[in-house]
Image 1: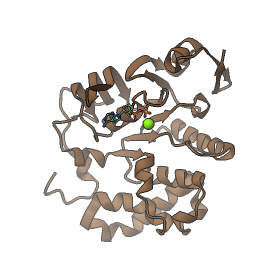
Image 2: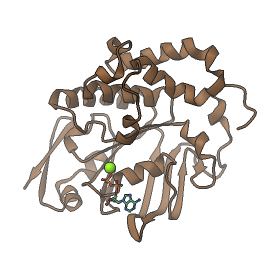
Image 3: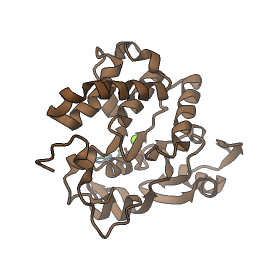
Length: 280
Ligand SMILES: Nc1ncnc2c1ncn2[C@@H]1O[C@H](COP(=O)(O)OP(=O)(O)O)[C@@H](O)[C@H]1O
Ligand SMILES: [Mg+2]
């Protein structure tokens, strides 16, 4: 809202009164078409504040499109989409975006390699509070360091971002996404390109976050069931832009559903709170 003098008050605009305040994402019959192709078709989806969703599907299934919708970065062609009480396409998207943490490969590419790691994180807040940043520098710096510590990379705060390993960068990117204290955290394939150790470390950090009752609602996109962090509660399975199955993780992640999603016979095994999949 213009005229707001209090940093952080950007999210205080009254939400659409008809929308359930516990609903973080609400899609009703949402379709997205580009050049005559349906990237998403008739998607109905509800994400509540305490839920942690994993979105699974093969390449091209529409996962990133779904995430961009939830991030307010893309408008539906058909149907209605509400995010954090705001109707996508009828709201100030820039204001909405400050309430959402997002990591994608495309955003990661824009991070300057020569910047100090703590600055990579702290600048996420500066872009939100704008000219008020001067008086908040110290608090922001402390928050950035705390978040880096939470993600297990606190010791790297003064390193140059470009010198970090891929796994370390991924964790810095998530710390950056959390910097503005978002109400919704969206992660697009955060474990892509990591080696086994890097993946396991990231899964453990995301699991901690998933179990944290103060953490925002989360949506994690992946195509590997091995990357599902313990503590995640729900799953949506996408194939060719359509929902194959969705609901509670344990109910949804069946061999049958996964076989339909990936188009080949698959067996899903569960060991404790981790999943694996292989061809039947
Ligand atoms: N602007 C666009 N125009 C046409 N097709 C697109 C466009 N953007 C994405 N697509 C296609 O839409 C499909 C879904 O893309 P995406 O959501 O990125 O899938 P995923 O993240 O599951 O791999 C892909 O086949 C992709 O090539
Ligand atoms: Mg994608």
